[in-house]
Amino acid sequence: MQQVASMELIKKTGFILIFLFFAIALKAQNIQFFLGPDEIGENQAWTITVTVNNDRLKNYESFPDIDGFRKRGTSSSSQTNIVNGQVSSSQSIIMTYTPTQRGTFTLPSFKMKVNDQVFSVTGKKIKVGPPAQAQSNDPFRSFFDRDPSKDFFGKGETEFVDVKEDALLALSTNKDEVFVGEGFTTTLSFLVADNNRAPMQFYELGKQLTEILKKLKPASCWEENFNIENIEGESVNINGKGYTQYKIYQATYYPLNNQSVTFPSVGLDMIKFKVAKNPSFFGQNRKEDFKKFYSRIKTVRVKELPPHPNRNAVGVGNYKLEEKISTNELQTGQSVTYEFNVVGEGNISSIEKPIVKRDNVFELYEPNVKQNISRDGARVMGNKSFSYFMIPKEPGIYNLGDYFQWIYFNPNTRKYDTLKSIQVVKVIGESQRNQSIESNDLGSFYNTIEVADNTLHSTYSNQWMKIGLNIFILLVLGAAAYFIFKK
Image (cartoon, rainbow, N blue to C red; front, side, top):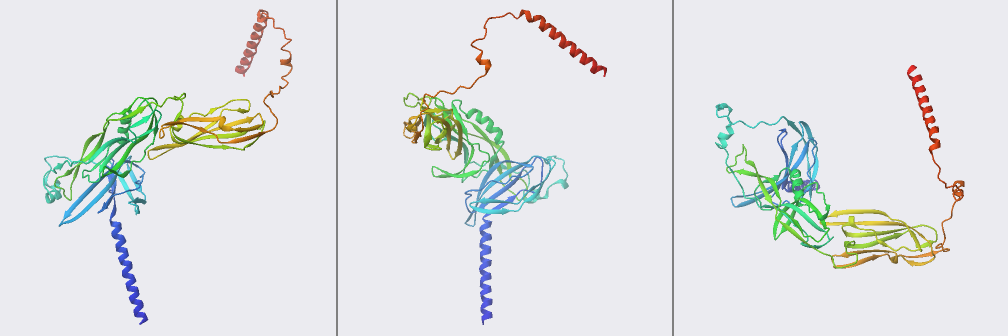
């Protein structure tokens, strides 16, 4: 009986494991990877396609790099089918690669995260041969040169239709109005609606972007470029409608004067495919075409800063002070290091050194300057530190806030503010305020300056001596040359 029970338990466990296996396999089939062919021509493209069935493509990581190929860009497509009342849909993202040379190249096995799931994809070898020749439309081709699949699946030329796209080129800013020196982030994006049915992909984006930025970049602003290298899709919601956003360019601009910043309309050429009216299993089901998308004109108004004696020299942003000092117990005549570190969001590069009070209490030297800038999301943040080397000269208790101050304008509060040191130092020792630098013995040369004869003398009498010395030098050089050549 125990043996029969054990067998029943094993069978039930087996069924459960088989069920779990098929459940996992079914879930994995929800997301599929399709690799391009094993062999292509030098003038053909190769693709990796990620398809999500009956679900939305929410996020994905970067596609792998392939030696011998260059990433051309991504395109997306979606499809909905209704068969016998059953609705099925799919959404795909396609990375297109173009070969840089002929040869056999290897796509190594890779892992890629899609919709928060990690998938392992087996690599393959790709052979790049001579350029593929376009099929000739020779009207005198014999019957035996015909493709029988065309006779079976459809005769005549394929008719292609233009599917209306739901996409746009958008230039946006996170602020419509700023103060002089206040940053605003500008983003140029290509947006594709979730319900778009027209297949598209980028075309020579790097070359186009160079010309676009010549028109976009304002001359009256300081630029902090986010340096987008990989264009990846990101799901966004605009006015209740879902889009996939492809950021092409992003930068934060800081106006240098009160002139309004106007971004002109710019155009971007996209590859847009026409699709076959009657698609067949064999043959070409889409045809490459082009469409130009234009952005709208965008203007950002720039306001002058409120009146202030140092209005043209203050920093603009949201900052705080972080300071360090090696010790608060100081000795007259002994050096100490003090660091005044401005941290926050704004144009870090334009931060000037703090206003420093000069007196006989501290001997201060010019600071060493370091800065660190980070760009994240739509914000530019960082810090700029000023490290001072100072020597106390007078004993007493001193507030360093009286010596180090930095004025800035906060656009959030619309008020000027001052960062002051909160460090208090105690200086002990004898006063060195009136102590002069000890003189060293400069030697007998300087001792004879006071008694030296300052009468002017003519140098004419020395001319004959100079001539004789020059003749002697020439004779020596001539003799040396003679012996060298003779030897």
